[in-house]
Every structure is written in C-alpha cells, then in structure tokens.
Length: 132
Image 1 (tube, one colour):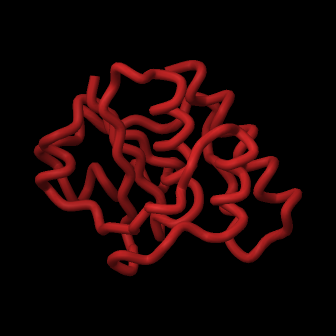
Image 2 (cartoon, rainbow, N blue to C red):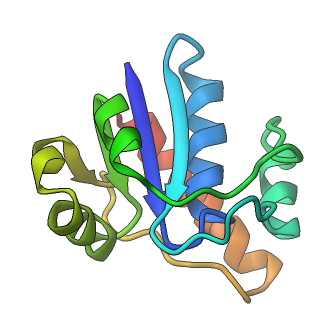
Image 3 (cartoon, rainbow, N blue to C red):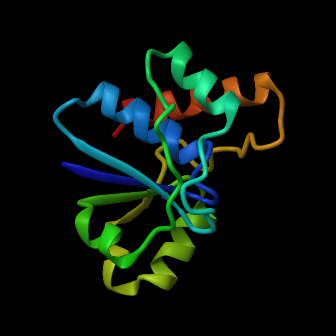
C-alpha cells in the first residue's frame, strides 16, 4: 500500500501522519506533501518532539509541494482536513478517486500553538492512522 498525507505546509501534521503511519505499517510506503510548502523546510521543533515521544524521527524531514507524480504514485491520498481533500480533488481531478479525508475528520493545525496543541494533534493523528 502506498499512502500520501497532505496538509498545508508539510511541516507539522502530514509529516507526523507519515511517520506514525510508517511506524504502524512497516510494509507500507508512506510519504507526505503540502499544498503550500516551502521546499526543503524542516519539520517544526514541536512536531519533531511529538514524533520522538512516539518513537519516530522527523530530523531528516524536508517539506515538499504535492505534485501530480505524488498523486499518481499513491494508492490512497489523505487530506488532513476536508479543505485539503477538496483542494486536491480540484487541482488533481484525474486522481480525485484516491483522495480521502482522515477518518476522524479535520485534524487541527498546531502551527504556532503550544506543546499541548501539538500533543492533541499527534494524538488525533495516531487515532486516525490506527483506522486506516
């Protein structure tokens, strides 16, 4: 199974989803991308902390924009919010059938938030990944 997670900047939510999904499903290929990513930006410090607390490592993460080749590669594409999923379906209509939202609905964006906000986000992503 090839799974792609997409959020806005590819520095918080989608990298966490990628790391947690890959750890839970070692036989899957998992990637993450952003709709408005700054190429090669690192994961935020707090996202990396949340990953580390859960036994994952985001130290090598580099943000990337989602491209058609990413959509083509994936068997399933998960938008971290309904708006992300809607944008993916609009921008990449040929791949609309692959696009889904996270099982628990919109994952709140912790960017600029507190450690508690990141913990809530990571917990939600863990629950969602368990349902894939």
